[in-house]
Length: 440
Ligand code: FAD
Ligand code: UQ1
Image (cartoon, rainbow, N blue to C red; front, side, top):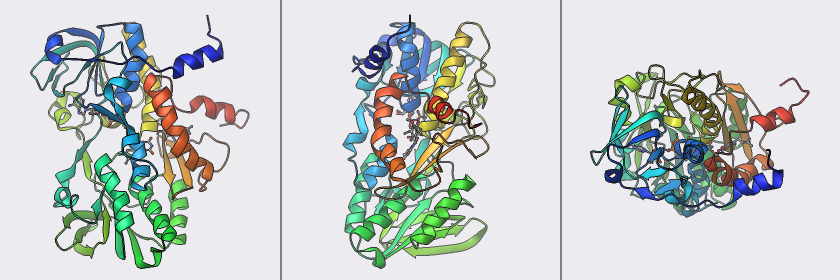
């Protein structure tokens, strides 16, 4: 029987009981119906969809971290609009109570024998596996960056600690070059390296320092953004704000002693540029997790879990699925993508568990609220093929206050209260309703 709307909303939003971690030793060699590797955005959301139905002792989440972070908030942390503390919650509070939380790290996969091994040497076997390990940040991938992050001027929103430092650098900035970089690797949230630049621009204007700041965006990409509609809109923003953009320019070294950043022109590798910085916001290199790369059976050539771009089912092991940043899904790596993926994965995994075929298909939906300051954002939403797929029947390529408020206030609520409880599969239903009769 369908629940009345009020009752079902109350159930969705009610605080949940907590997950307690079970030691890997307690669970050693135990066989689970479903094992989820990683308790981040994807792992936690998938686990929530299966935990109650499977019941106690049937589902394990293997996740080493004590704290679950809502990473999209780190852009706002860098701009001083939220604190790093607000972006994190204890892992035990977000993982479903009906799941066994094995607080450990997976160190190897053996998909032919349906088991994984954790750092404490325990083997956990499964009938079905969901890999949700995220992307690996390689802080030492750029010479000198790791050390430079603890010196004046250098920061990065790609960790909560250094995102807090970003705001300190904005405050400390006096005059000179403020440089923002995009590395020569795939990254999560490809809009984030430039969002903080627009925030910096506005911060400098607010505090009377803008005429002393030379704002430079050095990106390894050949474009400002991968979707033409939003790239065109962003080019207008950079022109209007007097920001210098250099494409195909990749950060190769940071020299904190002389406050210099070294760049190479990726099209002419002999061309090097040494630029002095007053402030450097660096986006680190990223890659598939090493542990995946060491299991070629599971991965594509780059080390991402080799799944069907439509069904998210593994291309060789039908009892294995992947979600989010560690997957080979050819879309932009965001939490918004994870939300849409989660609904598809859950449908397909349920079908496979029932002996049927995986038939639900993911369209590649992803979204990136491109924050352009302290009160506006461009709400990029697109699908496979870099084709816009917008929720609202307005031009989302325009800078809007409503898009900013949605990013700052609505999204965190939606994430903690709905998505992590398995109750948010992206805005597809709203999009259909809002475009009803409009042929979209
Ligand atoms: P994660 O959420 O990163 O989770 C991976 C989990 O796996 C982690 O908990 C980790 O501890 C665990 N793990 C790793 N290794 C192992 C192991 N060996 N064994 C077991 N567990 C392991 N997305 C948006 O939609 N909108 C935005 O505006 C946005 N802005 C962003 C801004 C910044 C600065 C950053 C950093 C990210 C942003 N994102 C945004 C991206 C978004 O946060 C990620 O795409 C999303 O969190 C991916 O989810 P995931 O589950 O794949 O990985
Ligand atoms: C979204 O679904 C989502 O997942 C929770 C985000 O992650 C933080 C987003 O940033 C966005 C924009 C969406 C899409 C949602 C709507 C209502 C457009």
